[in-house]
Image (cartoon, rainbow, N blue to C red; front, side, top):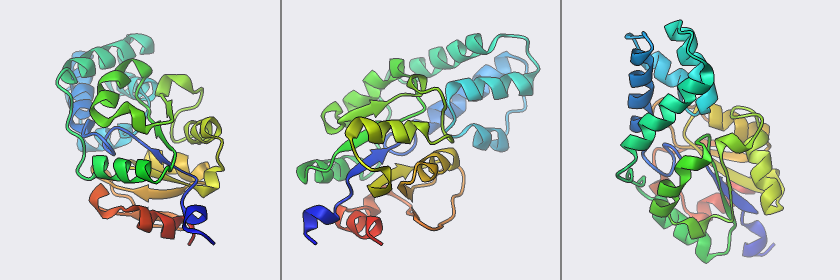
Length: 222
């Protein structure tokens, strides 16, 4: 088997918390919006429940926690207005992200960005990462079922024309890991806020700096 045949057919990346350090922005935004709607006891457990979820799911959870009658669509608008303000200065790229993207690109491995973030916020993030790295991007408002449903990852694989079972997905949240595994991908988890355990076809690392193309070749063929 040649080296080229052993490579993953594609690598599918989550964005928030995985490639870009936006999780602190979302955590602050969720607490701010919840407080505005009357919930002043936003906890670490609340943060974990929202981690990796779509804006609609977060809005629904905030509505439940606060007991507000404000429509979910309005809460989504509040969330995106707040996080857009915080993203005016591009959030930092995670250590090892640019190096991994460059290494995969040099070997011609297709990449996709699979995020729960809506399309309207992707411009700033993609400019910081390098939009040219991604042959496809799937935003949270472009699928009917958000993570942890497999649809986002299945959509990315379809757009790239690859078999999800021969792809590696890189994620940082339990919801994202569940979505990628349900789609059949090999998963590499880089947990930050919520713990993630190793399992069959699921590998856990502490940083993207631990991931190389040679290592990805091994895990996708194990």
